Amino acid sequence: MKGLFIMEQKVVELVYPPEVREGIERLVDIYAPPMRAAEALENPSVLKDADVIFSSWGGPTLDQAFLESAPNLKAMFYGAGTIKKIMTDAAWDRDIVITTANDANAVPVAEYALSQILFLLKDGWKIAREVKQNKAYPNKRLMEITGGFGSTVGIISLSTVGRKVMELLRHFDIQVLLYDPFVSEAEAKKYNAELCSLEEIFSKSDVVSLHSPLLDETTGMINGEHFEKMKTNASFINTARGAIVNEPEMIEVLRRREDITAVLDVTYPEPPAEDSPLYELPNVILTPHIAGSLGKECGRMGAYMLDELKRYVNDEALQWQVTKQKFDVMA
Image 1: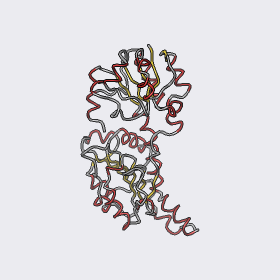
Image 2: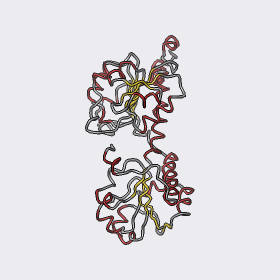
Image 3: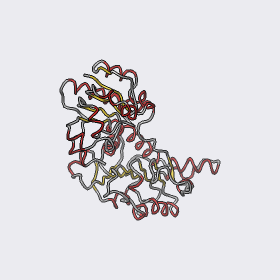
Image 4: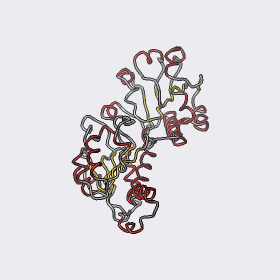
């Protein structure tokens, strides 16, 4: 079986570190150096012998022109998240197998969310800000902090990341509320979660963590009224997509309610416009979309693809394969 690595050059070593590439090369004849998608298109003859492609960010779009240059291509192992921009009808018509490391990328996002949930329950960001401003420790109010024990965390969407966050929360003495209109009470109970409305998530939770996919139905789903309903000193985390939140309405409420803290790893637009109030609001924490895989974490995605390759070679069911049916409902 012959194969190629096609992706942005700067991510090859991150996603496919030496030990992962060595594992792949024991099973596949990698007959050319890693290349960018543009290089493959400029020299399409390099594709003609490829049975499989290993890819990641900046990977090729499997359109008709690409597939005509790769007549033997049977599978792509995509060491990154969504494949919406690379799969086409032509690829589905050719029955190209595609598997993705979306689940691997969800791991650090869930870890980021958990870190913020626990820190926010300690009023961490607010206290850190007060200490620097006042040059003193706020001893008198420390006993008023919510803390983790017996607190309430609201999870919006039982997505891949949402599930992982809820699995992590099982280790803590925390009540979990869940909003997901497509989830049954029986499934929610598997995570020791209580199903409730979106409004209840915001009115009852000490911390709300958003994990919905960005769809037409979810664009602007979180609005000012939801933030108005939040408990005193409650917090909001967004590691999903900025456009799910009606940002102007959120900003208006955050201006009036400095007791609320918002941790935003994603915004809309991203980054925020230069004159955005998000940069100035003291109760907003901005991080530049760092929740997903960074640095060594990227190697987990390549490791997932190596495991998938082993299953593929042994004619076993792939764990992370995306079918046309799954693709049609993906964000």
